[in-house]
Length: 587
Image (cartoon, rainbow, N blue to C red; front, side, top):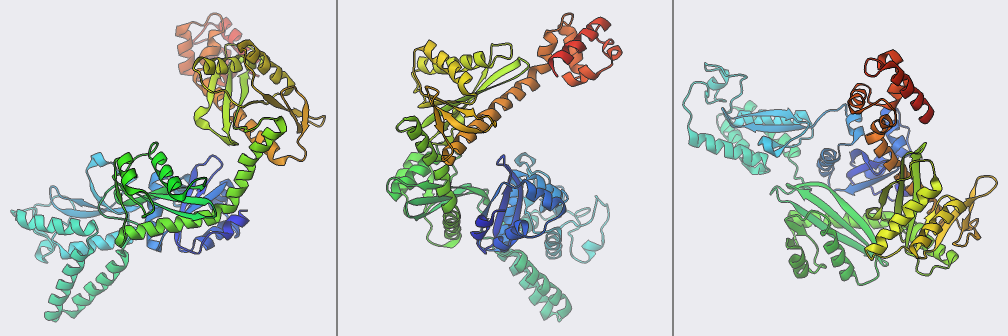
């Protein structure tokens, strides 16, 4: 599994994401060595819940970071964003620790875990931290250095902490607001990333203890200082100014442009977006056009970090946001990390990208050649779905240059109230192209139908009524029920035995339109199935229908209920008639 993909994974730290067939991220992990970690899933022996997770993986992706600490922070941010189901299962549903500063009624710190953090709560929360031990150790150290409230509850007499100088006696003493404000500013400054505040205070205290010959206490603080320096290792993946910004970089090779975008929200890296473009114009034009088009459909941050190859002045004017081209510091480090990911994406995806072109663009072109349609671009296809004539619907999907264009998909609720595939196809096709003609929209280059000669004939009849002509094709099964023959507009056969790319393209279109139609059918069934069926049974009016809906909620439960139970809501003879109707029409 993933033999070729795994060869391209770098031996670098980062976060990886496991994705299922529906495109949903089901697990987010981190690794010091991405290559080794991912190999362990697909080349090693896995058991239990890990094996279950691996069995659902359709593909994986990853973001490279500079340090293991960065990969940890990124993992936490991605888990918060996507809430992957296997992160809950594999981590026993534990949340990550934060440090919370509470100012009223008395200043204090605590370690807390939150399943969600909302801005409206107005909590002063910092983290997440690598583990609860690290968070508690930091809180304990701050408590030793600053006289915060440490005891539980609201005592009315001075406790031990006051007598050893680690509390100001908030319960009984009048407090110095200026001193409290200075202490609060120092603590918040440290928790927001200013390590120097705490390190300087620790060094001052160590020096004082050493001068007083209290070497044991001084050594304790020295050990704490060493630990804090490790925990607070600079996280280059974050900027502590809480500004929403995106980082954009690219890598270009042999006509292929790989663009990587990182999303930073409130100073934290929350994931990104990547794409590979087979360029047709100059590098600068492709890059600028893509960035402009991207932000027509996505949230615009306050700031973009880009390299010098973009047209800064034009994009700033068009997008109405600030563009920074960093040359050093943390921002440059982030830009370099973005470039590394763009380069790795292209190296990893180059072969699969070429294969994708073969499967889509080239297959689409070859289909046009087989059908005599030059410059074939837009294919539309229809599929019908119903349950014994009830809830009849049709779905239409659009493929452009061999790829689905989901924004152009359409759903049709049929007026035909019986299992009549032929007339359902006529209705769906007629409604679709009557609408396009009325709105003066472009017609497709080809209509592809799934049901062979019968559906092709229905499609032609609808087009004839509209007075238009659009090429039609369909697939025909042989005597072994295998689909290997393409039918052109005149229903003449074209052998697909040696046209695997074309056959696979048509199969993908078939599967997609079938999925779409079934999905819509299930949707309207779930919303209106019970109500609609009850309307067809004599003796059930609006009041009785509401009672049945409230009591049973599904057709299956009504069908399997005891008639005497139903008779508590509706007359016994009507209950018998209802169950007979259900058994006849919902087999």
